[in-house]
Image (tube, rainbow, N blue to C red):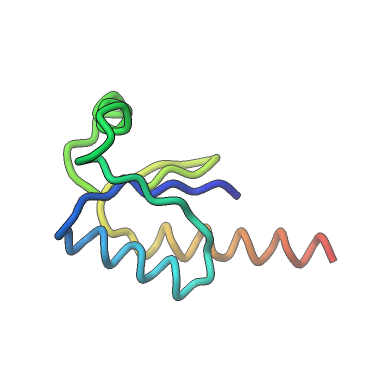
Length: 84
């Protein structure tokens, strides 16, 4: 599952999101929107005005969303179980 976290420095919600993803064992890429103008434009084109913005293959959202993180962690575990 490809997951990208669009983040910025000194962002409490960004840090909480990354900690929760790490704790859930979910792999993700981080893009700093303060250093990547194209990434910032992509986030804005989706209608978001606050960080973090998390984009998965099936979903995207803004802010710290433990419910969404739990869902993608569960989906990843379910995929791994069916692959065995």
